Length: 436
Image 1 (cartoon, rainbow, N blue to C red):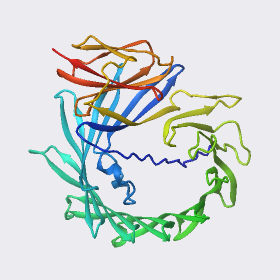
Image 2 (image 1 turned 90 degrees about the horizontal axis):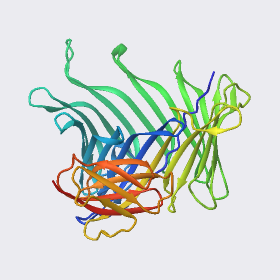
Image 3 (image 1 turned 60 degrees about the vertical axis):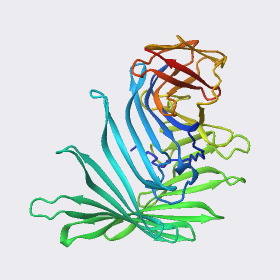
Image 4 (image 1 turned 180 degrees about the horizontal axis):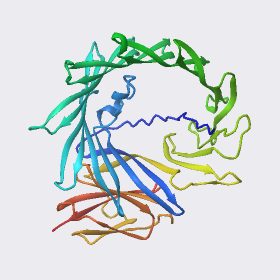
C-alpha cells in the first residue's frame, strides 16, 4: 500500500497597503502545471486588489474573514493567453468584512453574473454567523440560502463552529435550518489543545456523532506534537501523529509522521526543511513517504523548492518528484509551479513613460501591441498585466522571456492603460494608449 502524506505547509502571506485614487498595490498568484518537457501550462491566475482588510490581518481566527482583498480577479488558460472567468468583490464595515459576491463571466453575453454570496453578521464585536447563499435565476433572480456557520467564542478564540444547511422543505418536511457539523475547541491560553469534529446523524431523532479529534501539545511555546484520533465504537482510537523538530533559531527542521496500525509505525513519512543563512522561510522542503514499511524506498518522494524574497515572503514554489533511481525531476501532469507577486505599485500620476527597458508599439495601438524588453535574462518566466487607469486588472498573460512579445488587445476599449512587467527580479511599468 502506498502511504501519502496529507500534511500541508501553510505560509501566511500578509500584505500591508495604502490605497488612494493614484496608487494601488496588487498581489497576484499564478499556478502552472508541468505537462511535458519544456511545456508548462498556465492554468489559473489570481489577482487581488488589496484594501482595508490588508491593514488588519488575523483580527478574527475564522477562515471566512481572511479574504484579504477588496476584489479578486480569476483568469484561466486560453490559447496563448488567459481569459477572465470570475471575480469576487468584497465590502467592509470599517476594517471588518461585511460581504463578498462572486461573479462568473458569461462569454457569450459578455456580462458578469451573480454566483455566490458570503455575509458575516457580528455580535458583541465578533463574527456571530456566516451566511452562504447561491444565486437562483428563477423568475427575476434572487439569493437563496445554502448554509451558515454559527460561532461561539472563548475570549478571542473560537469555542464552537456550528454548520447548518438550509432545506426548502418538501415530502412533508418543513423548510428550515438543519444541523450538519459541529467543531469544538479547547485552549491553554491562546494555544489550541483540542479539536473535536462531530457530524449530525438524523436517525433515532437526531444526535451528534463523534468523527475525528486532534490534540496538540507544545514545548517552549512551539508545537511539539499533533495527535489525530478517529471515533470507533464510541471511543477514540489512535490514527496518526506528527512530531515537530526545530533548530536553534526556532525554525521547523523536520515534521515526522507516524501511523497507528495496532502498534505505532514510526517515521512513516517526513517533511524536512532547509534554510539559507538566517532566513526564517525555508528555500527547500523535501517530503518523503514510505511505500513498504518499515523501509524507506526511492519512490514516493516529493520536493518543494521555495524562493523567498527579502521579507521572507514566498515568491516561487516548484514541486519536483523522485524518479525512483537517482534523479529529482518534474513529472508530467503531477508537478507544478506557483508564483506570488507582491506590491506592484501603480501610480497613474508618475509613470516613467520613457522607461528604456520597455518599449510598446504601435503608439497609439489598435488591436495588437508589440512589447520589446531590454535586459531580461533568457528563459525567465515573465508576467504581463494590463491595468486601466483606476488600477483594475483588465488583461493578464505570461510566457518565457524573449526579445519581443505580441498580444491582442482588441477586447479593450479605447483609452489609456498601464502595462506592468515582472519576472521576479526585473519590474517595470509603461503607459500606452489604445485608439480606434
